[in-house]
Image (cartoon, rainbow, N blue to C red; front, top):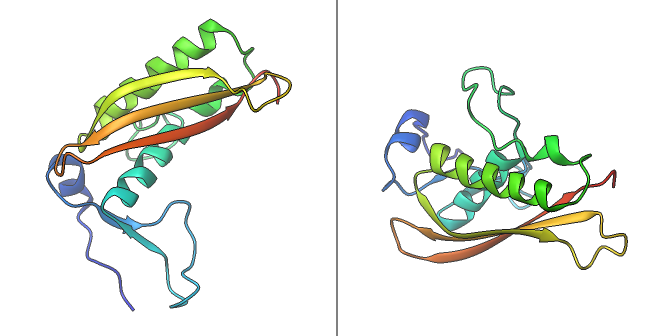
Length: 145
């Protein structure tokens, strides 16, 4: 089974294109034995997760790509960390993923973490093409956790 033909340049430049491609994280489809694919809202979710977990400069041909949230993992969990994470998320999405529009970005201490070292980022967004709304939660370990 072959996947859909991808045009990476068009995917970035055309915000109305229905996204499709490899699922993130990369894995094999247990039913077909081939590479797992994602499309539509699921693929946009995968793309944003990949974007935010990539550090700028990490990708050879796209040095500005990335949200740089992994750089914040060892920083103390305080208001400065939360504001910086919120800024990086908003900036990365605005610059690298034109197919979604963030409605609200909130970063706060993770209440489920007993040591209060974890940080939880919540991104409420709208898919520009379909006007479908979604909520993405990203857990970040902070304060040495």
